[in-house]
Length: 175
Image (cartoon, rainbow, N blue to C red):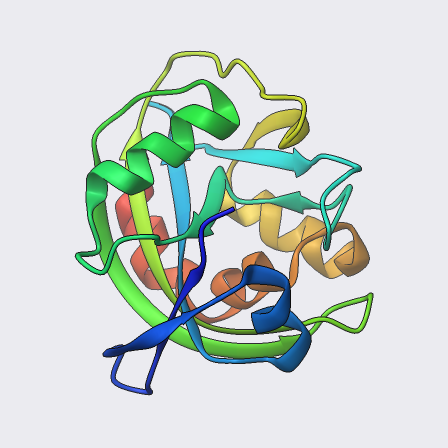
């Protein structure tokens, strides 16, 4: 398992550390979240596999991961989407943000999360080690679902939906 890239508040690399060590101590690191929309503007969600070391069995965005190269390569993000969902499509970064949260098992997220979007009408082919299910949902319905059952969704998806969905993601979902 590759080490995570530790960064400062300006997203400048400081070094590397092992993934579980980083999450046990809540060290600031670089990550990405992928949002794939179909031609109807619906977001592809994945249900995280039950064997994940945190947030297992929760609904989340299309794919996510940690950069292993310092260059913020879209290619690396596209590779992760293929690994998790068996899906290929061009991706582009639309924003980055910093968030911190304590997870259900005592681990902590402290990430600068780079958010990428893409478009595809191809059905995903799930990697069962990463995801156990998928669904397409429009963003308004997703916001209602998160309000009704917040414990069913990952922390980062809830943050992104609360802070960025009404403007950035809704515009992106329309093309």
